[in-house]
Each structure stands twice: as structure tokens, then as C-alpha cells.
Length: 395
Image 1: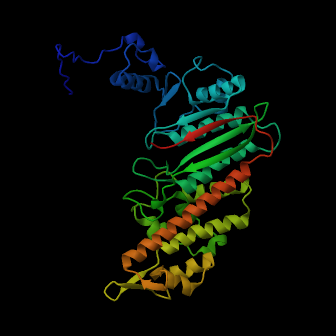
Image 2 (image 1 turned 45 degrees about the horizontal axis):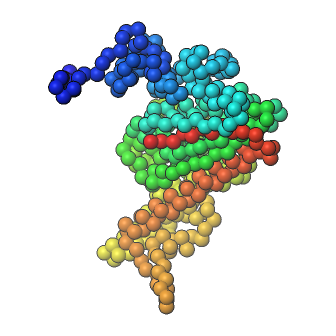
Image 3 (image 1 turned 120 degrees about the vertical axis):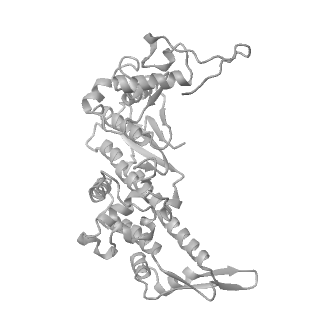
């Protein structure tokens, strides 16, 4: 029970309740009294009694994550919302997308949709449905299938940029802004993606019950395939960078199947087989780097790596770097002064920090390369008449 003190003198009165006729309204701005309890009560009534996860608040769409797949996103629903005004039908992400599409066409102005909310609120899924809407109603006139490519970027970005956190099994650990370009007849002709603030620290550290980026587990799940023999991978539990969170699997998720989807998406976007193998080599090499055993020597002042270390051998082989050099520079650093150059040994903690920094840097560079490649695949030489942007950003 929450008690609310009533003080008539100081005008501290309880919040006023809306009349029954207004409770369950599909637009919060229709309520007589708009305050936090009224908003929460209205959303609760709509969700529990009518099974509605969407409610308007003026031009803002409020969405509640039902934590299950609802049958309200099919092609027939898209066509039902196409051409309708925002207030004519039940609140829906498609209605917001239709409004943006219509205003772009009617007012000749570029539009953007901003999706925000806390982790696990459903931002990424909402952004995906908005993009699917544009891909359907703005399907390309040619056979270039550009809309398929726009949608194919999702599984790749989720594999390399999403991870399991305590709040969310598929949490985006980066922000992204996708601009979808249209021609004069408002057909999709291309797209461009910008990413923000990738969480690099996750590559080398995961909190309890969390996972590293999906791609590491997908690759480990497919390690037994003949084409990946040279990656020398085993299950995800065997690698330091994928096992710190404790549980390496996600309920209801099959990493091997998801990996197939990731590969198909790469192929659809025109990433050659040889390039794909290179990407997987780099990802495998990061796992090997994280499992290199470093021994402290001389009271912890210096360190060494055994020349027989399997993981270091694999790392050097996969990236094509010289073994002796790698072994030396993992444990030493170079100081350049005005007059001379020193090579100093490093303590165990310094070596671990340096190794982690290298792993994070390799992953960040790979991430940027893949985004750049996706943008090349989605780029068009045709003249863009207008665009709709979709911003999916945390916080």
C-alpha cells in the first residue's frame, strides 16, 4: 500500500482520476488529467484488457514489449495501414511509418523516426518493422531487390553488434542510424547506415549471465564444418573471451542456425566467399588471442609466452603475422625518447591490458569494415529524391 499525504493548506492533493469513459483511450492526449499514474493506468488497462501494446501520445507512439511474438506484423497488416491516416486505425508502428512515408511524398520533405527507450524495451525490433514497412510499400521498381538488401543488413549487424545482457537476450550494443533513399516515384533506391559507440569492452569482458557478441558463439557452433577446420575452434566454453559470463547459450536460440542466416545475409549483400572466410578468420583469431597463456617471471616484473602455446600459433597463422615478433611484442613495449629507444619488459597486468586492447582494436576495425561494406552494397548511383531516416539508439 502506498500512502499519499493530503495537505489542503499547501495544496498537496492526490492525483485526479480520469472518468471511466476515457480510461483505455488509444491516445494519451485525450485524457483529462495527464500525469504519471494516469499514463501508467491507461497503458495497463489497454495491455491487460484489450491486448494492445501500442498507444499514441500525440505524434509519439508508446510501445510496450509483450515478450512474445504477436501476429500483427504480416503483409496483410502492412497493406491495411498503407494509405490510411494516423488516427483512422489502431495505433501501430506501421501507422507511424505510413505517416512518415506520406509526409515525405506530400510535403516533399525528408523524414526521420527516432526509436528510444531502455534496454529490452523493443527498440531494435520496432526499427526493423519500420524498415520492413518501407521495404514493402516502397518496393523497388527494378529487379535490383534493394529492399531485400536493406533487410539483409539486420542479421549481420545483430550478429556483430548485439549480445545477451541481463535485461535483454538480443541487446544492441551500438547505436545505428539508417537512411533509406527514395526516387521521384517514392520507390526505394538505396540506403546508408551510420553506427555510434560500439561497446568494445564486451569483446574482452562479460558480466555474469551475459555473453559476448553473438558472432563468436555462432562461429563456435559451426566449428565442426569442414570449411572452418583451419580456424581450430572448439566450443565457446573453451575460450576465455566467450565464457566469462558463465552461460554460453541462450534459451530458444540456436547459434548454428543463426550463423547460417548470417552467412546467407553476407552472400545476399555480395560479400565474396573469400572475404567471408577472412572475416571468420579474424573473429577466430580474437578468440585465440584471448586464450594465450601468459606467465609472470622475475617477481612479476616481466612475462613470457610459451613458444609452444597452441593459441598463439593459431593467432599468428590466421592473421599471417610473424610468430617470434608477436611473442616478443606481447610482453615488451618500446619507449622512444629524443636520444634513444628502449625496449622494456611489462608486468603481467600490463601485458593482459595490452592484449585486451589489441583484441578490442581488431574487433572495432572489423566492425567498421563490415559496416562500410554493407553501405557499399546498399549504395546507389541513382539520384536520391528524398529519404526517411530510422534512428535506433539506446538511452
